[in-house]
Length: 525
Image 1 (tube, one colour):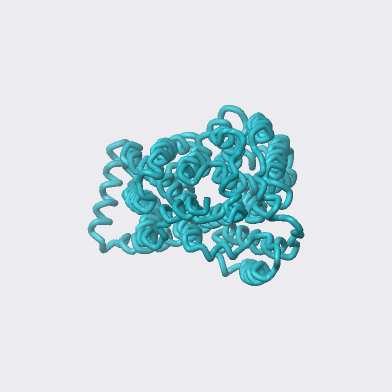
Image 2: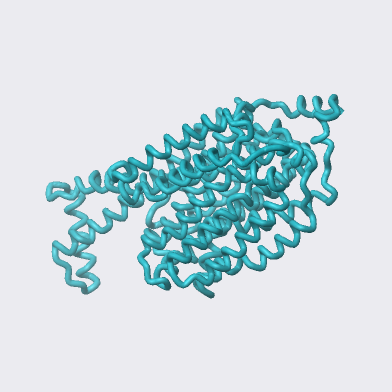
């Protein structure tokens, strides 16, 4: 019995909030880099003399390498020690950031981004595992609130930071800014972080699972590539994507089969036997889809239809980050005092409601018409994330925290990739549908269309502009195209809202075991 309770009795030597500061600096710069480079892509393409399409590999290469290393982070942390792996990953990430800033060709930049993704992939799960095991169970909600400031807020403020740096300095400083933060993170990690005793004991006698890691790398890397490039090649219409999809299915099935039978798996899938964790990973996938899907849509809407610059579009969605930051502070203080089920259900409701509010966009609105919906959306995200993480990890043993954290963060990232892929696909397909539907009314027999033609001709004449019937028709068709694009954005926001509402009933499936767990621990002691 004493041996079973030893992990729970361990406490770090330093104040948990100092440990939180150490791991959060590394997490923020890693998560920030997933979105900060987006607005700089046109500048990168122009400076390196490549097309915008080729420049997107700057994003894809990072995401692929990040996805490969992320679920294996717990195994590396257990085998080599979390502190050693964390510091090594920060060093790799920081050095790769410097190489990105010094790159003079697209090939070298992509190589540096792959290194950056490999270093950054392990930062999130290891940081989260260290953070959760450093705090007592009753204060883990506060720890998750701190973690959510990096995971949820950083991607939102990324476009603002990236836009300002790109416009005022250079796209290279988007990467070089990581150097001082990375160096400080290494210093704090060396000073405050330590490995718990049960971590080394749990990995005694284990060997490297080369087969499992290889199957996982092939499956996840190919999946990320397919999700990122699928819409560009019209999905299954491209032969290479069909073959890649077959590789994904085969590799992941083989991976699951192998990991369930090997003695020391690189990813322990048996943890999904825990009902709370299994439900939590499903829900966090949806949260990732809504977070990254809407994050991709809003700047695109402001830039393509409203005519905003990259920096202004970043500022337009900035209030979302303010709402997320303030909500993380408030929810962190409420955690443990208010039911996590209530917080999660309320968060999903607000998330769905604000997505539907954002679906009321039009081409004549001002920024003040959408700002409250954007703030509300940002407020809902940490509410969902904090409650969901706390409930999912509540029944997980400290020894399994690294493995659980890696899978949890992986599913959020996969959900984000699926959300972005779904958003761009709906945007492209529904634009065509709306264009056909609206275009059916542009006939000589439609009185509304004829009235619009006369109005355009009369307005042009009153302004002293010579306008023929053909010019008036071209103007109306241009407006029709803008309306078709607008309606496809509306469809996207309503779909994300509906998805959020659908997951509210999931809240009641979580096992409410907080009191029982505390009682069990007390009895064990």
